[in-house]
Image (tube, rainbow, N blue to C red):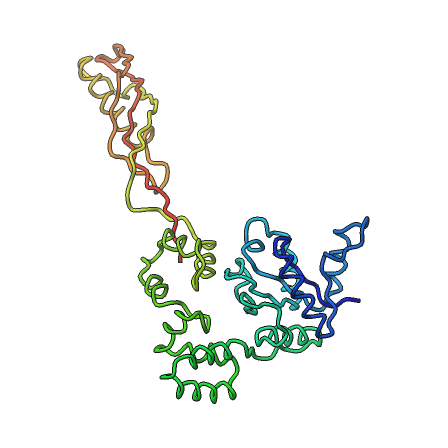
Length: 335
């Protein structure tokens, strides 16, 4: 039974093949769909291999994190749920939403050497999954940091100091780069999972709740891409401050007054006053807290007036009201 399942996008088959050869050179057996038997149900074969796997390797590339990479993400999710996932960043891309917490091995510059420090980190992680134990601390990032620092003669002393620290600490690169005075430098060099200075300042300058700024971060590769995507996913709609005009018409009717008035003119004036009040309170009343009424205008009121047996006049009134409504728009707010 093959214990390692490799999930990848067809566009990345060349990288996948190089990886399989390197792992097989270390005595490990890898299942990948290149070896599916002809004529059999390929979905059933994939399902069986994924179920039996003790380690699931996934290649994160532009193809697998993009819109067409759903099948790869599904396979990776199965591995993550079982605690078997070992992700590889085969290109300079951010992991898909929901996978950022699982640290990926950076093989974006790997050319197939089994002696590469990052490949050795992958090998150690895979064997740890197969043996059911925690993965050891990665050594590849520290090796890259030392090489880059050693490239400058003026940093020779710093290299020696960092090497001493690295030999006695886990996750040395991340720990070193968290220091405030080194964070921007590490970010500029692509080390320690730190943002560049420009990224950090732009992130800090975001206005609270500004979804547009988060979309800019989520749409481009960078340190804050996953964080921005997570916050966008949790966005809520809240009422804005401004009211936009949204006039509407309404029909209404007021009955005759309970007591007659001396003249028909007075009865008409009374009916019109009651119609205006009716429009304000009923026909044009705001429908919820996000509407505001700015006033009403009655168009061509139709009176129904008559003499009252008790003496005097009464009038009923049909009206069409033009309601000056303002609607408060809903605004997307992000964390």
